[in-house]
Image (cartoon, rainbow, N blue to C red; front, side):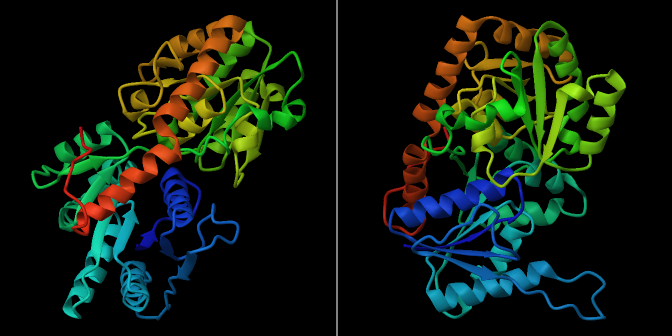
Length: 383
């Protein structure tokens, strides 16, 4: 099968999942063509049957804003026609589903029947898609897709509700991990992050407002009052400097290490004793899954897609958004009780491997491709 994948190539869950999906598909014998304005950040090595096509956007004085969506559609059309692609699989609705729809219909005019699959990841529905400037085109584009997937049941339901999407039959296919990549055996650099007697508390994100970074600092302030600990912040974004300022205001800046962006976080996660994710909302929480696969219990906010990843009381703890006192109490409890920590750590690894290993999730995408191409009977996985 020949599959074109379009995603945002920068740091973020949707681009990471799309890239790993492409690599896994290529390992299973498919031919994969990435189409984007830059090489995906997790596509760092040569992989057999994986190709990258860069979208070039010419800048004309007439265009105040370069029309990337149109340039993307043209590149998708050209690659699909030249490489005889079977599937265009786009990740993140705007502008990728729109560009995919244009490319697909242009190809149909020439007799090339390529299929369009759109995977919804979260903020494309809950944030960008809700902007009045994009709502109508988001609804139109997802409804024009040949098949839709969402990374969680929560996101599926949110999409149907927010877009009055009566035509949307959405398959739920969760994010995934490679257990060989995320495991505790990689914790070789722990002594560089914290002293032996200190617990390593970690947070990784794009440091945007939705991640509630001040809550991360407040939770850690409470933790370090009861447990010798160090907070490791990984990533960058608009809330990074305010977080560092707040740590300084609390007088705990000497216990907070801000590392910035890393292409690979597996070695860092292997060092974590606890992972914090108190976000306003998480459509899935890929980094929470990666933390669990690394043996780290997760403390965060429930009521969104994160509840489908973290099992409260078993692999961590989930509380109401903004309830930093309860989150800190759960964190202190698990960090103070060695037996409890070991049980949750082992349960976290087991849950990640049993439910979200790539070997179990990738075949679901292959089945969906077969179904949309008419090679298999349609069986929904949306339940």
